[in-house]
Image (cartoon, rainbow, N blue to C red):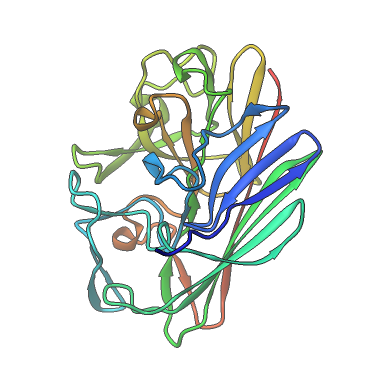
Length: 294
């Protein structure tokens, strides 16, 4: 039987992380021994896309079909409940570790042209720990093909206050607008962010609120989403135009998925904030996760 690629352990100051080559995934991140993201065992097939890298699109392509440059394409539907193509093509690929030290690792993957996505990309993910700054993540893709490629990226960490139920935690999301969806999670329209019933200013614990929406209207120059209890505050910092927030029912509400996204759901059809990578061009999504006392 094939031997799974080994996990990579990183340490820096009070932080420790585990990165797995499958999906260039973040399997764990701790600060002073407390979980900052919901973890999974390196050899485990994790629930809810825990920690996976999402390229060449984040979120969903409705019905697994889209048109680009006058051509209609079909990609595999992998979420039967919604009939959507979810979270790109690289989540379950084994990425190659090309560089590593005690505090960082770089993983790479070549996405060859295929039916449904006939574009040629080279993607890399860098995870870097520092004692002061926590975990920096950079997702970069370069078009190594001969035709312009539609593209988007994200990552799928679940922020957690050491696995405490999110009902008891306060979530802060500095967004003004939400993308509402239908029963199959297909985009419908934008509306004021509070319309989904989430206390975005973070003035009270989440309670039983459920959410699985994309938010925008985020501050220019960078933003921070935080999840906190009375003793721990976990933060994700990014400068992406969108962030998906999911209240974590698939992981027993022990964490909240906070996914900075370069584009909204179904951007391959709507064109909203879609990255169009010309041959030779690259695109990078950068983010950082850290923790402080609550």
